Image 1 (tube, rainbow, N blue to C red):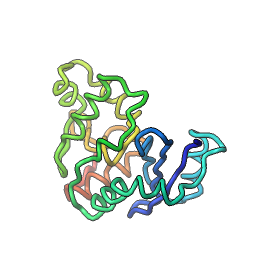
Image 2 (cartoon, rainbow, N blue to C red; image 1 turned 45 degrees about the vertical axis):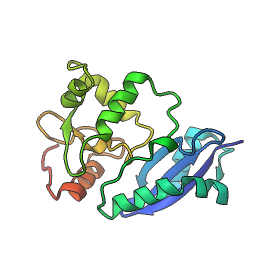
Image 3 (tube, rainbow, N blue to C red; image 1 turned 60 degrees about the vertical axis):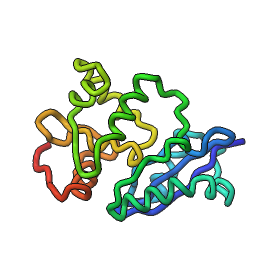
Length: 178
């Protein structure tokens, strides 16, 4: 079966969800983009031209993810729907990093070094950053909560401004540093 995508709206733009049966429902979350056409180009670039819009069965399978994201946008801390996430291609160490990031409480941040220490690799802050860059489930696994040691935002797939906005949405605290 070819992969299926579903688009949901958020305060920051269109969010993409990709499922490829018979795996667990969610293969990838795409960060919000202001224009749905740009999001579709990105999804098709990653999955190929044969990706299709999700039908009712796929959307129903993704409903817990859709509900969790709706709660998130409404300011409610969420528990990622782990059973629905397809971890294909994620190493054990990367998964440990992602799980440590998922444990960061809503409204708080941790540094790359703090996450590295949490997984028993205190000198692996760069590895943590690389893992965040490849996070297949942003927003659900809140990589935007991982910041530089000086608490400036650092890198982010959606750009530093989106990372700032997500942190501000959760904390109400701005970051005027780059």
